[in-house]
Length: 185
Image 1 (cartoon, helix red, strand yellow):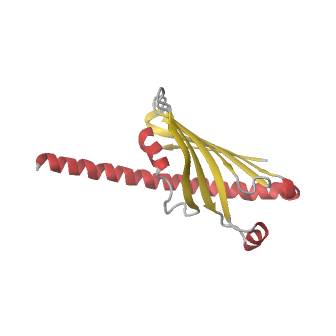
Image 2 (tube, one colour):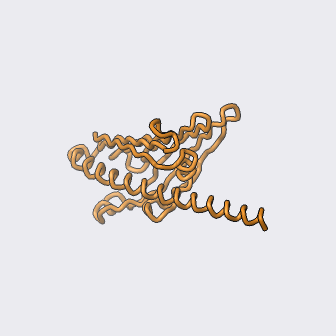
Image 3 (tube, helix red, strand yellow):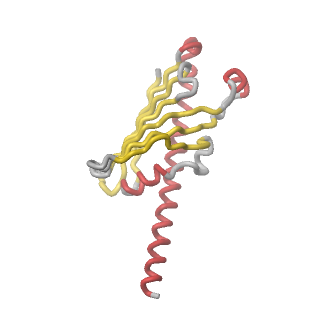
């Protein structure tokens, strides 16, 4: 079993970063994410907590031999999330559904205001990768390969989120300019 842990501070407020999270896919940084489907979503009227269940379709860049053995390069991930606007937390948990009997990948992510600078957002990410079943003989090698891929994708994901944040900030700027012009005109 391999563990992955990372933390990053986005130099943007929690509201903007958490909004960007929902608009993250599709984007040019993460073309491997092909589709995101919301399966269930509800808001607790007493607390305002938003709970969402999503199915994410991912196209993996795998060697031809692997595609032939396993019948393709598309996999599915089930994601559960909770947004608590009062506590200003976004918590996400995901688990691969495709080939999970051979390789299990569970991920846990949080977005919270950075304790050192509440105008920034602290992102934490942890994942557990475990090869099993027919892959046990090669578990260490497969887990190492997957850990490296996970690390690369985590970096790309942060770049993609920054790209979406930039787009949101530009939209806000354009809206403010439009409102100012309308008010003065």
